[in-house]
Image 1 (cartoon, rainbow, N blue to C red):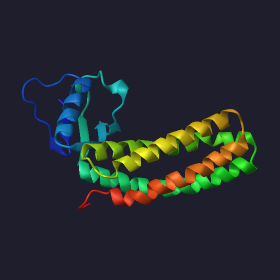
Image 2: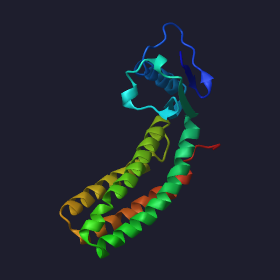
Image 3: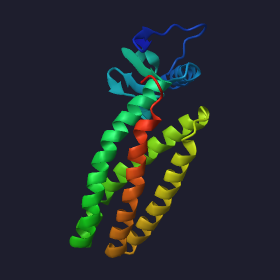
Image 4: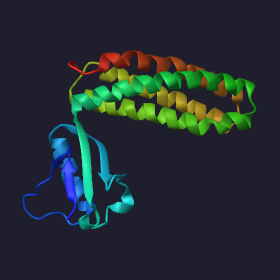
Length: 196
C-alpha cells in the first residue's frame, strides 16, 4: 500500500479505503474544500496527476501527495503571481500590437497562440478572484466582473479581425486591450486579503 498524504500529513480513512485514484481524489478534494483550502499540487509518484492515472489501483503508486493552501494564502499567492505575469503580458501586448502593424500577417498570426495562452491565464485568474469575491461579498467583485466583460468583448472583436486578416483593426483591438489589462494590474495589490 502506497503512502497517501495531504500537506505532508498521512491520510487516514474512516471505513473502507478507496481502490482507485479516481475514487480517492474526490474524497480528498471535498475535504479540502470543506476546510477552505485550495489545492496547489497533486502528485502521484512525484508526477502531476493526469486523467490517464485515475483508473489505476492505489496500490500501483508508491506515494500520492496533495498540497494545499488556506484560501487567503492561495489568493495572495495568485495575486503576486498575476502581478508579475500581468506586467510581462503588458510588455508583450504592446510589442504584439506594434508588430501587427509592421510584420506580415503570417508572423503576426504565428504569435497568436502565445497571446491566447497569456490572456487565458489572466482570464482564469480574474474568474478565480471573482469567485472569491462573491463568496465573501467583497466590494471589488463587481469591478472585476466589469473588467472580465470588457476583456471578453474586446477579445471577441480581436478574433473577428484576426480571422478576416485585418491587421490594422487587429492592432487597434490589441491597443484597446491595454487599458483594460492595465486597470486589472493596477487594482490587483488592493485585492489581497488583509494580513497577507
